Image (tube, rainbow, N blue to C red; front, side, top):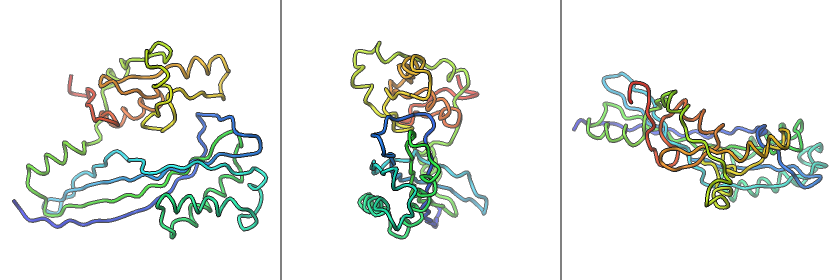
Length: 245
């Protein structure tokens, strides 16, 4: 086995935006803010000075909080209202480093200033750890790592087009599945898009997609995922990809 040096790097990044797909029925006078903290890992092997592709695992949600902000406070400066302190306390309880919190609060405040109160604000915080293996490692270990992490190979278009689509009310375990969160967006599989015509929305929210491994997802979540990665987000079941039947 050849020797190798492992270089480790860490990065914390945040994205704050409104979710345009799902419209909520918020308590009158309040705005919902959803905080999610993800853990993410990446690896890269280098051989003879040549860098291989960066391989990412599936981000894991390690903590989540939901807070309600009085809309009357949204237009106030942060120092004149209580919600930044409430949100900071929640961030601390989630394990977010104090050094990162002012930036998160600032970005959230900026979005809240121009937000639609009927749409929730999503605050996604990701702690990424990247490992680079220099001088490479034993081929067997490399193959094992590749198999475990999986390269981002898109699923075949034909397999995406043939995905099984089901109505929630046709399933025996409808009540359970309806409350089960989609592993990609973390919304319940029975969520209602109130931004659409009501009759269309009710019919739309009844439809979900099931992979051959029996895991369920929103169609508008799993299709974009499979267009990038042919593995099931939950169990890594491999969908057919181009060049493989």
